[in-house]
Amino acid sequence: MAGCAAPVAAQFRVEIAGIGGTQIPIMIATFRDQDKSPAAVADIVRADLTRSGLFRIVDVAGSFDERSRITFAEWRGRGADALAVGSVSRLADGRFDVRFKLWDLVKGEELIGQSNAAQPADMRLAAHRIADVIYAQLTGDKGVFSTRIAFVTRVGTRHSLHVTDADGEGGQIALASPDPIISPAWSPNGKELAYVSFESQKAVVWVQDVSTGQRRMLADFRGTNSAPAWSPDGQSLALALSRDSGTQLYVIARTGGTPRRLTNGSAIDTEPAFSPDGRDIYFVSDRGGGPQIYRTPAAGGAVERVTFTGAYNISPTISPDGKLLAYIARQGSGHRLTLMELPAGTPTTLSDTDDDASPSFAPNGRLLVYASRSQGRGVLMTTTLDGKIKSRLLSTGADMREPAWGPFGR
Amino acid sequence: MTLNFRSATLAAFVALSALGVAGGLGGCASSTPLDEPTVESRTPVPPGGAGGTGSASAAGTAQSGVSTVDLTKPGNAADAAAMANRVIYFDYDSYVVKDEFRPVLEFNAKALAASRSKRMVLEGHTDERGGSEYNLALGQKRAEAVLKSLVLLGVLESQLEAVSFGKERPVTAGGDEADWAKNRRVELKAK
Figure 1: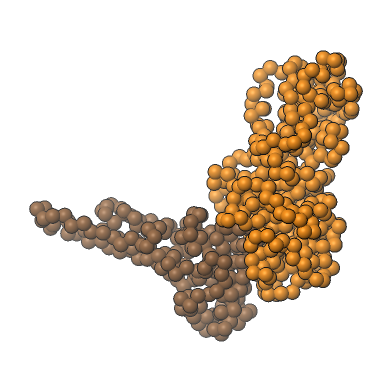
Figure 2 (figure 1 turned 180 degrees about the vertical axis):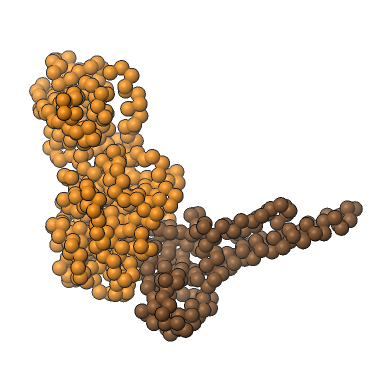
């Protein structure tokens, strides 16, 4: 074990701003023989739990694994309510057996013990799943550590659509292009990404199977095709099209075909977002002068204005329970992540940065990912809904933007 | 905006005249009496001092200086396009095609009306401020405003397509008003 900790620890640095309210103190012992596998399992679990804002990591002195005998009387005095221990061992077929045990040190009992075999390429996923189990055991809520995030980077003239773990690590490139890519959107089953690509020198909406790379043009009409948003059942997408002049909302089947027009006006209507029950579509319109967020039934009907504070409100996204609206509001010359309760709450600013964009809820509704700028570079941030715990997803120095948090499952 | 449209042209003009000045100096340097007081000769600097990416800057005073005009750089390509009547600039948050760009519209409308087989793409762009999708819609609105103006001048709608790049393809990456003004544009491109 000696000597393996230093480089690994640097890789999983989580930058935290602010202190949360109630945090569960937990100890995660370094897994036995994790240094002989492709992933630093315990380090990943610690970083995941820290980023959630609900845990405080307490250091563990000594080496332990799932077979270690835990004497509660000894452990209680060490400042943690829970303890996770485990090990990694290579199987004959090349996979790794990842075992762990979670102890409740307050009640003095074992909460759960698991053994899972993982392909070497899935070792990070195995670690995120352990973090999900711990999170679920101790908070009663579903964890999102094994979900994925899509985002776009720009290095010079090279634009890449990435898919990474929810911590920004383990990245793979789904699309590399000499032309811009914007607005990635996950299908509800997590298997496909819709996005806007300018590869044909205009905005065209594509849908790509994430695991096979197969892609198809979904909307390539006259003018601009953009802002794809999946319906919750995954059968159709709302889009912004300018095919009939002016940017207006349409709904198109996931297999393509003739789109059905949803809004009719001379103003800009764009950035549709379905409510989780699929009944309503929230969107941005400048029909009242500047851009504001509105709502209309997905089947068509009356349009209601939703935001009233400020002169510039864009990029709506609805929490999985349908109760919260996150969006970007202009304040002075800055654009800030803002949250409001639906249907008509008071907006709360969640950030103090000036260049926020593209908010997206984690599938459990506990975190938001959004784009911002730091020292002149595009970065991705996650925040808890009270804005107290923020972390920056690690980058390799590329400009990162347009994040979209994927659903549970992959 | 007017200023930037002109300063882009001016920068190119300065670059050309600087070459001329340098050549002239090379020819008459030896005939300048050494006992006469030095007269400082200045190259005019474009208003705002930005000068653009193609400006000669201090090259005018050095005799070995060669000013590169690099059309592969997006900024310079746009400057060149501006001279060729291919760019219309817009005020902040505006889709109004200003009167000063009427010659650009007429130049292109004439060419398109003369040959109905000619096609043109009108590419709307915005500055970097605000969201990518909303800017895409703003750029589209600008491109469609130019489309309508050209149709009023006799171009067939079928000869034109209005598209938008939003804020995705700025001609200059800077973050001040002069840069933003250069980026708020519609480029008229032969298809």
